[in-house]
Image 1 (tube, rainbow, N blue to C red):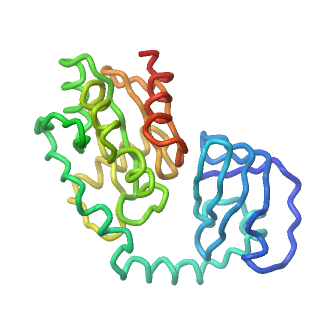
Image 2: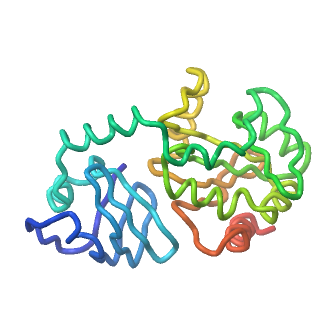
Length: 241
């Protein structure tokens, strides 16, 4: 994940806590640009921030060497922390236990109800279904059992009755998951990695809206405040529907 900050950097020593609340006018992560950025937390492996459109996070090892130095990145310490995280059960995993399993590749997803959006894991099948029902396709690139903003958006937006009702009428939903604690079949891992590469996704959560032909209409990177109303309004803006 490439990150560029348009701000003169002061490469000074200090505690990680002291770097919290640091402000940047513009922050670029891959193809996404964030404005009015405030760093809220710095850990051994990640930075967390809020911006004009919501919240986000990035891995320190993906930053430029200058920013890694600025945020006191220690590769050995970060690797140790991430190894411990992998060995432990995800602390958010129980929050996701109520979510329905994605349909197997090639299967038809059951219709969403007014209170529950149903996600599948195969884009070709979703596109075919979207074409037959005049719907759009929403891709959810997520780290479902470790990414805090992914889990928060799931709770605040995707699991709500309002989004479920909207999706049932307008969307085919595809979850492109990159879990750390829940093994995926090798074939699914390869398919998800290929989709992330195809759409240039290098941070989570990322939501990509497609038409039924697979053309990208717009994307939301990171957490969007405002609940289901704000997200639905954004999707309508992307699609013009």
